[in-house]
Length: 56
Image (tube, rainbow, N blue to C red; front, top):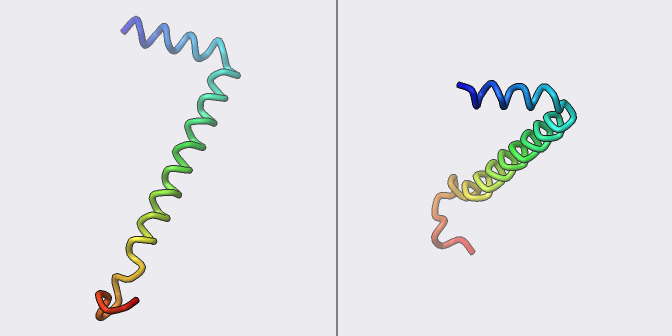
């Protein structure tokens, strides 16, 4: 419990550091979501094709 309180006091004391970390975390999470959605759409392009093994 002391570690959580210490971390909370550290984050409150250094607001600019906290804001920079939160912005970095949100940007990296958004990039990962965009990348995963792109990969999913690329892998499911030919899922509706009738005979996709013979299409070149």
